[in-house]
Image (cartoon, rainbow, N blue to C red; front, side):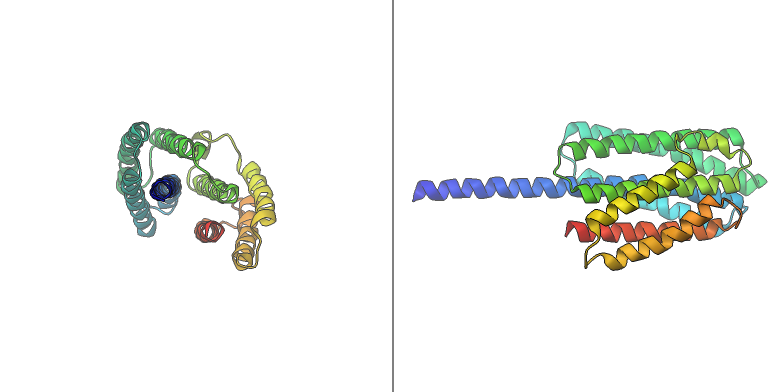
Amino acid sequence: MTRYLQSLGLALALLLTSVSSHAAANELMIQLQHMRLASIGVMTDFFMYTGLDGDSKYGRRMNADMESFNASLAQARENVASQELISHLNDIEQEWLSFTQSLNSNRNLVENQGFPSVQMVDELGRLNNALVTRISAAYHQVAGVSDTNPAIEKVRDMAMLLQEMTTQYAASAAMDDSEVYLGEYKRTMQKMTSDFEFRLADLKAVAYQRSTHILMDNINSKWRFLRNSITRQHEMDVPFLVISYNDRIIRHLEELEGKIGS
């Protein structure tokens, strides 16, 4: 009996350790995902800020995204045990600092002379791309050793695709030489639109349930507006509505992620 209880205790201890480790890995991936979205979102805010001559609304949005990034980075550190991942987070923090310094320099130019330097925006784009790539490497390292839900991964990939798509739209609306920044990305907006459409159809097949149908319907209806605005680029000239619908769809995707994972 004593041996049985010892074996049971060991099994329970291992189970609790496994559950705790899985929960920490999942929380870490959530924070890394938030960091990816916030770092790309800052670029969207910057282009809107530039195109609208330093509009304070988008200045506040930049500040909010930067605060969100810093909060997620701090929480990510709380869920890291591996020395390799700690090193990843240190590198992410250094690249984030380089990016924010460049961002502040560009913001100052917009505030003081009304427009940024094309070369400095190009550098800002390169720094942002390197930062997102670094965060994604850490994310995929954790995902590679974790039991992740494929449907949740689909949702997160879609959120990233949408955020990048919206940033490119804002850049092309704000910058005469937007191809300098857009060249950082290998996919055109038309290609990304088609990719998102395909992924949305795929998501319906795995996530459309009674508990999620309202969210899926909301995503569908908002996506139709967003798709039409992006494919008819600047014909309607409503970038602020594109940003608003992007924000709402990403919130819906995060809600959907929670329902899938519950």
